[in-house]
Image 1 (cartoon, one colour):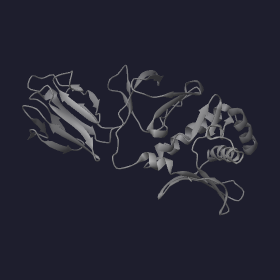
Image 2: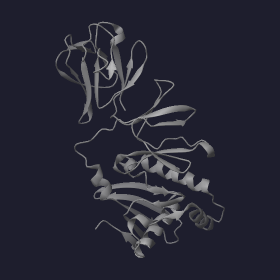
Image 3: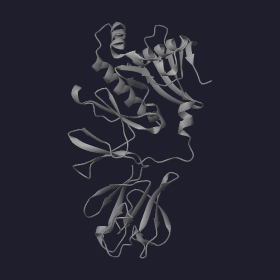
Length: 318
């Protein structure tokens, strides 16, 4: 998420994929109040992995004290842009990462939280909130068991503040993200005694390794439920649903200790957070567990279970 900071005021702005600077607030995304700045002075935009500035002004733009006029410049972190004569029109690019959706504080304009990642907002039982990326790169929030689609302008309360969601998604013309997800399947590799469960997400030549984790037991239980329902001829919409109470009971027997709903919710949070951080496309699969009216299920339709080098159940792309 690219950020510019004003040299004088220290105000920060998050760059959108097409971000116009100028004096006319009806045209410009960021208004620059100086008479020698054109109404539509310059556009900063993201293309093919880089940020560019295109000057379309009367008087030109300075970048690192070098004059540019009616031309396009590819720029990098820590470079200084100046739109007019006054120093107050100087901005430094302090972050040149790709554009992404984000939360902006309604009480402090300099506070932002970038996506994509599962946010570390789980503080206590009554204030847990999960932010994750679902299918088709749709961001969602999950709070108190309810799922909230995140669209432009949606506000949420967390971290003792009010936040508004800003859509700033960029579209990569080269990579077909939908194809990556549709062709993928989850591969569970079980040890002979099933004490160790390794999970991989495989999509053609792409392999995302989730490793061996305690929360893999929850995913395995949900995957087996989906396999069972497929074998019994259930429709896709009805496959794999487990009530929170049922899955807690099953895991209590597995771990020989009492498991409650809070523990299940915590595991779901940790699963999403772990998957979202796996480069390069883990966040596309973070919504591996789906919720509905007190029930949860393994949301991805394709999976494979391997034990002692043999498949013991699979649902694969036809």
